[in-house]
Length: 261
Ligand SMILES: [Zn+2]
Image 1 (cartoon, rainbow, N blue to C red):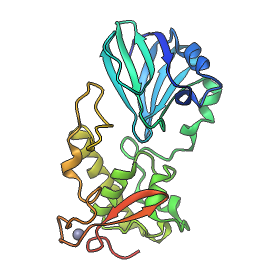
Image 2 (image 1 turned 45 degrees about the vertical axis):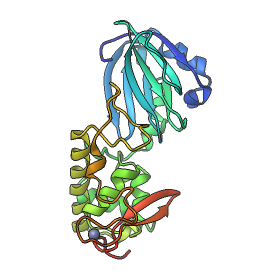
Image 3 (image 1 turned 45 degrees about the horizontal axis):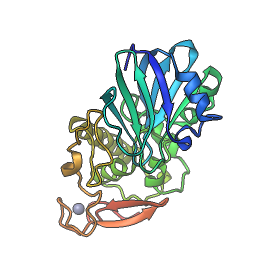
Image 4 (image 1 turned 180 degrees about the vertical axis):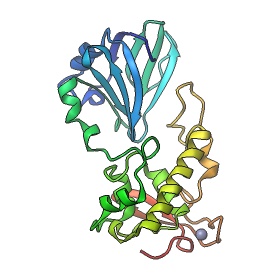
């Protein structure tokens, strides 16, 4: 996509364009733009375009991008399509429509969701002291604070659970109760979890919602220690993995390995 021009843009579902005034604003702003830089901050995909525009996309719970030849059969739930000047198409497929594609101008990008993100967990991770400062006096469970994306950005439900497991931190532990040494363990666990996941192409669950842009599944599922394993024995200590709900999200942990909150 880098260096390519988006010769045409279509929005198939209004909700996917909800961060703009209208779907036609997305189409008008993006059509004809050249992609000058492709990046990511936390879970936001950031495409810097010419003329001062930025396309920002978020996969939400079930979204994925596919890169296809032009004219290839459209998957169900394809809500955004751009045809590039090499004839390929970039499609956004999102069954649950929690994801979005937005087109921001220079002023809007400064007040967009991107501006509320903490340092990126992979590209620019905070140090333990910086994270300690961000979590100071926070009484919310550490799991909720990780999902919040404010203290550190980029962990979704699966990788937050896995990182807390590897760091031996209970997901309900108040963020402010964790000392520098525990947070150093957490940051190192985050690194490990993300490195493993990236190496294996990400976590495709049985619903096949997440696929790589070429349509292949990621194989990180077998690397998971606790996520989705409630009721099964912990692979480290054999204690039964438990599930609790934190901020409406399933949270998985081992009561044996992860000390009391
Ligand atoms: Zn265990």
